[in-house]
Amino acid sequence: MSRPKLLVVEDDAALAAQYRWAFPNCRVLLAADRRQAEQIARAEQPTAALLDLGLPPDEEGVSEGFATLATLSRLCPGMPIIIASGQGQREHTLRAIGLGAYDFCEKPVDLDVLRTIVDRALRLRALEEENLRLAALPRPSPIRDIVTADESMLRICHTIERLSQVSVPVLLLGESGTGKEALARALHDMGPRSRKPFVAINCAAIPEPLLESELFGHERGAFTGAVKQVTGRIEAANGGTLFLDEVGDLPPALQAKLLRFLQDQVIERVGGRTSIRVDVRIVSATNQPLEEQTESGRFRADLLYRLNSLTIRIPPLRERGEDSLLLARWFLARYAKEFGRRLRGLDASAVEAVTTYRWPGNVRELGNRVRRAALMTEGHTISASDLELSASPSASDTDLDLRAARLRAERATIERALARSNGSLAAAARLLGVSRPTIYGLLETHRLSPSQTTPPDTAARDTAPSDGDTP
Image (cartoon, rainbow, N blue to C red; front, top):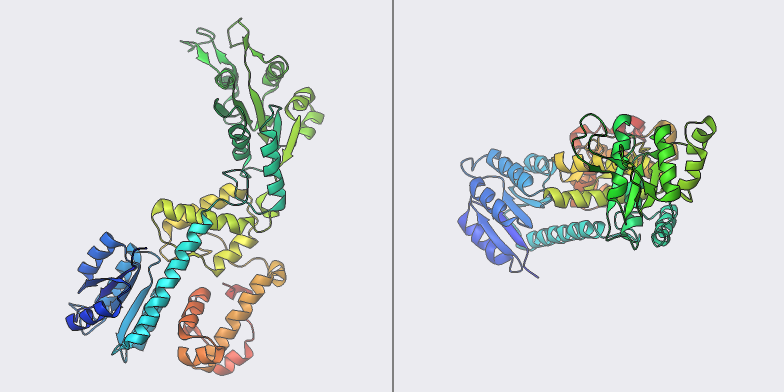
């Protein structure tokens, strides 16, 4: 395997040379200022970075160092950046950690300590990339475009696998966005008709005057504007599969004509008198209660009986257990790769929001929200606000949600530790029994800073945050 790339941004030539030989397992890339660091980051995409805050032309200040931190975070999302700072710069170090730096090491540098920090950062980066790779792998489903671990959905997938081998009509029932077209394509792709056309038509998206021509085609001169013969969707799907989406919106006149085709496998183009025999498998889908429509006369009962030789009911996403979180991580890995973003995953607020939201738009809504978040987020992780979701469920749900309760208890404990230690992160880490890097991660997860904590006497009374404080 190739050595990881460590970008060192340091204007002290002697110290930079010391860094070069201190990391024999890394390919060390040296930069003396922000311009060189930006050039190397664009060309090399380093695995990790070691950054001095005092860079020219502001060697005595930190403005250039923070500008470099922002530049590297933007160019290499997810890259751990370790800050090398002098003594007396504690407030600058905390600010850097708050802006996304991974850890820090005080100058003069102890190389053994620095090697440990860099090694931990490299291993963390390797684990994050492995997690993204594993999240992108196919799930235990026989259908390529269906990602699920839910037992009911897995049973549906295995049913689709069996039905793909026979040409009986199948009716798919489910809310919008549950994956009806993906299942219809699987019926086609996994069966003996896979080399023939798969033709889909949305019966609700085409105006009624044009729908008959779209389905059955028309002859030249059949109506005003029919300047040539046109093949309809049914005829175009000859030998393959015709997918009728939103079949419940078919007008009554077309229901009768479709019924005749299903009975005889013969069509006539609009304005034509020649019978055309067509061999097509029909798969239909709807989110409407067709049984109720047959009782009210809006949908033909005899057509329903032809369409629903086998009916498959697809559960909404809110009834599929942990699938919402599984799918969110799968979509994130997919879009992070598509957009060239190095994202670590979902933070605690996003996990809570994804698992408690009702997802009225189902998988389609989830995919759209994650895609937008992966494209627009400026951080290393996706938060609930990036998904445009609230991290806090209703009060009744919060009381019963174990994950939310754990997060509230953790946040309350951290706040009390910070209050007792008067904002000292080292003292708070000792009280909590965690390492210093761990407490930085906890502060980022709960979006806390030492300045946000209350005085000790107030903190002692506040044993738990309000619902509005839940991350």
